[in-house]
Length: 395
Image (tube, rainbow, N blue to C red; front, side, top):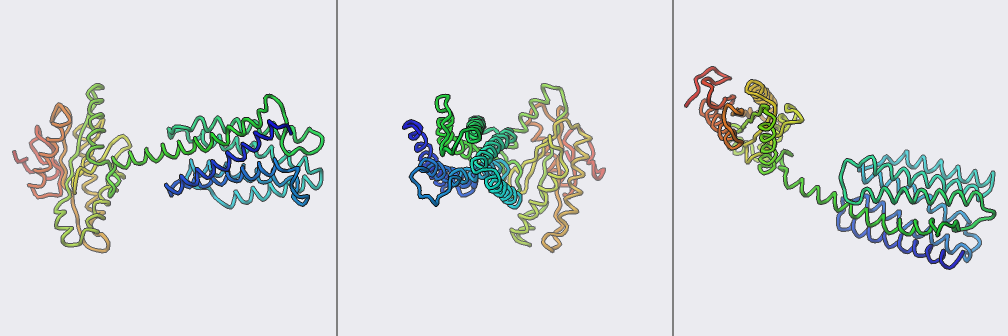
C-alpha cells in the first residue's frame, strides 16, 4: 500500500466518522429525522471498518482478515435501510434481519468451503448491489423535489461502481490485500473519500429541504381540520377561477356555516365542538373530487371551490354534503348533538365576473339560508326559489 493510498484510506475513514457525527448532531436538533440517525450509524461504521482495513498489517493476529470487510458489508445494508427510511418513513425489520443473516451465513460458508478471499469478494460484490439499491430508492422517490437528491443518487451509483471494482480485484488478485490497489488514478479510494463527505452533506440538504417544505405546507393548512386555511384557499381558488375564465369552463363556489355552533360549544364543550368541525371536514374530503378545494375560512365557516361545475352540479354536491353532515353529526362522542349546516351556492358567470363577486354572492345566499331556518342549500341571485324547500328567495 503506497503512502498516497494510505492517506486516502485514513482520510476516508476520518471523513466518514466526522460525517456520522454531523448527522447525529442534525438529528439531535430535529428528532423526527430518523434517517439521519441511520445514516450517522452508517458513516461511523464505515469509519471504523475502513480504519480496520488500513491498520490490517499491525492489528493482532486474532483479528480476522474479514473483520473490516464485514463491518463495511453491514454498513452497506444500513445504507439501503437508511434510504428506505428517508423515502418511505419506515422499513420492516424482520425481512432485513433475515436477509442479512442469510448473507452472513453465505459469506461464512463460502469462506470455509472455498477460501476466505473469495468470501470477502462475494460480500463486497453484494455490498455494491446494496449501494445501487440505495440509489434506486432515492430515484423512485424523485417525485418529491429536494435539493441534493440527484447528487446523492449519483454518489451512490459511483460508490456502487467503485465497490464492484474492488470486488473484482479481491477475487482476481493473489493473496489478501486489505485495501484494493486498482489503478485509474486511485478511483476506488478517491470515490470513497468523495462519497464519505458528499453523502452526509447531501443528506442534510435533503432533510433541510423536506423540513422547509413541511413548514411551508403547515403554514397553509388549518391544524384542526387539515383543510386549506383562508389564505391558501383564496390563492388556489383565484388560480382556479382565472383558469376557468381562460378556458371558458364552468366554476362554482359553496359557502358553509355550521348552524348554532356557539350553542354546541356552550352546551357540549369545546372538545365536542372541535370534533364536529373535524366531522364536517371529513364529509367534505369524502364527497369532493380531487380537483376541488375545500378551506376553513374561520371559526365554523368553510368554502369549497368547484372547477368545471355549473349551477345544477354545484347544487347537487351541496345537498349531498348537507345531508351527509346531518347524518354523521347527529351523535358526537355519545351525545345527541344534531349539528347541521347551511350552504350558499354561486356560479360563474351567473353570479359574478370575479372571484370576489362569486364569494360575495355565495355568502349572500348563505345568509338567506340561515334566515330561512338553517340546514338548507340556497342559490345566489338570478334564481327565485330556494332549491331545498321551494320557498321564494328573500330579496
